[in-house]
Image (cartoon, rainbow, N blue to C red):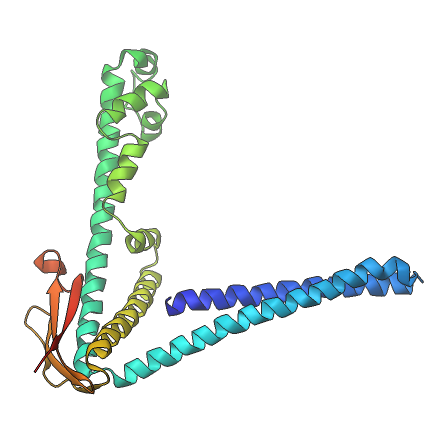
Length: 282
């Protein structure tokens, strides 16, 4: 679980505690009002029971919150330890990965927007063709015969079922366009497209990739540790010309070969990668 996910768990758990406390306060105030009215103990018994039950729920919620706070603290401590003890060459490699990933998503966002605009233009052209050719749209042609149809006109052609069937044959109906766009997108790209403010967009992208960088660092160091134990000598690790990290590393329990395999075309080789750690038996 990432730091961001743990932070969300902590926030939600703390909110649950606050909600439980508010409910307990509500029950306590109800008891006070009944007592002020001179109600008998029998009359306020149920409210007192509700109050006692709410205290138990507060305790349960506090335990859950404390557990998530502990996990977050352990995660932060782990990240700090790894950051302090990871070989610099590994940090440099992942910093280059982060930069390459940022470039990749900026380009992907621009490509998505251009493709979306292209599909919209194709849809409008198809709607014009439908207006000219479909027998079912004779009434629409009569209404628009003296002027050029506007975008609003084209989006509201009637009967819409005939227009939709026409668009579907070209893969330009609502669902067809959505599928085409989905094939060009992902969660990060979707978020970047939705953000109009460039500063906000860049800040979010940097934070997201920084979290992923930390996760990759923890994963890589963890896999190296699993083979060689605590790292003692990483001086033979290097970043190759293609941006991959390779070489050998020596630890308390042995020696291993580190090899990075890029996936995809040359322009995204630093974005998609798989690092293998093989024990060297001597």
